[in-house]
Image 1 (cartoon, protein in one colour):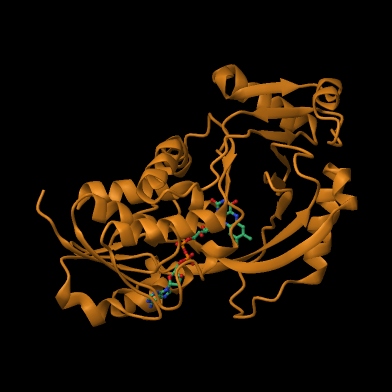
Image 2 (cartoon, protein in one colour):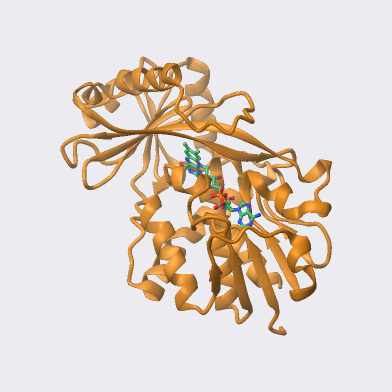
Length: 335
Ligand SMILES: Cc1cc2nc3c(=O)[nH]c(=O)nc-3n(C[C@H](O)[C@H](O)[C@H](O)COP(=O)(O)OP(=O)(O)OC[C@H]3O[C@@H](n4cnc5c(N)ncnc54)[C@H](O)[C@@H]3O)c2cc1C
C-alpha cells in the first residue's frame, strides 16, 4: 500500500469515522466540515443499532449486519485511541408483535437462525417485562440490537481524528472542484448536501433526498427499563442516566430547510410510545427535534465509486450509524 493524500468532505458520523480509519491506515487525511463536526444529521440521531431480520438477504441488510458485528471492536478502538467510552450497549430489543402475520414471520426467521433471539407469548413477555404493554401476539426478543450514545460517539470520533493526525478544518465549506488537484482521493460524506459538494460531479444518480425524522428525549428514573422496546416504526432507547430517546417516523420527502418539529407528528409519536410503555406517561419531555436524513436512490450501495479519485458515501437514511464502522473500514482498506 502507498500512503495517499486523502480529503474527506463532511464531518458527520460517516466522515469522521472514515477520516479516522484512513489516518490509522497510514494515509495523510484532511477533513473539511462546513460548520462544526456533528452539526448535520448525525447530531440528531438516536444511535440505535437495530439489525434487519436475520434472514433478509438484501445486500444492504448483509452490509448492515456485518457492520453491527464490527461495533464492539470499533468502540474498543475508540476507547484505546481517546480514553472515551461511546456508550455501546448490546442491550437487546423487545419487538412487540401487533398481528398474527408479524408473529408468524418472526417464528419463521427464528427457525432459520435460532441464535438471534426468542419468541415470547403475551403472558411470558408480561412476566419478564412488566413495564411493557405487550399485545396479544406477544413479542420477539432480539439479542443483537444495541445502541451508542450519539454525542459521546461524535466527540470521541473527532478526538480520535485529531489524535491520529487528521488535519481538521471546521467552518470550511468546500466542493470537489476546489480541491481536486490537491488530493489523490476525495471521499464525499456530506449527507444531504453531497450534491453541492460534488458540484460538477453530481448526476441524477448521486441525488440525495432529505427525509425528515423526529426525535424526543424523556426523563425517567434510571434503570426503569434496560432494553430497546419497539412497535412498528416507534422505538424507545433507555440510557443509564434515565434519558429515554424516542423515535421515529417515516415521512414523505421534505426539502424544506425548516428543522422545526411538527407538533402533530410529535404528539402521535409520543402517544404511540406511551401506549407501548405506559411508564412514559409520567416522564417529562426534555427535548424534541427533527432533522433531515439523507436517502439516496440507490441504497444498495453504501459506498459508491464515481471515478478513480472520487468516492461517495452518503444516503444511508435511517441506518447511517449502523453502517458506519464497515463503511469506514472498507474505504480505509481499499485506498
Ligand atoms: C431523528 C433521527 C433519528 C435517527 N436514528 C438513527 C438510529 O437510531 N440509528 C441509525 O443508524 N441512524 C439513525 N438516524 C440516521 C443517521 O443519523 C444518519 O444516517 C447519519 O447520521 C448520516 O450521517 P452522515 O455523516 O452521512 O451525514 P451528516 O451527519 O449530515 O454529515 C454530513 C456533514 O457534511 C457537512 N457538509 C455538508 N456540505 C459540506 C461541504 N460542502 N463542505 C464541508 N462539509 C459539508 C455537514 O455540515 C454535515 O456535518 C437517525 C436520524 C434522525 C434524523
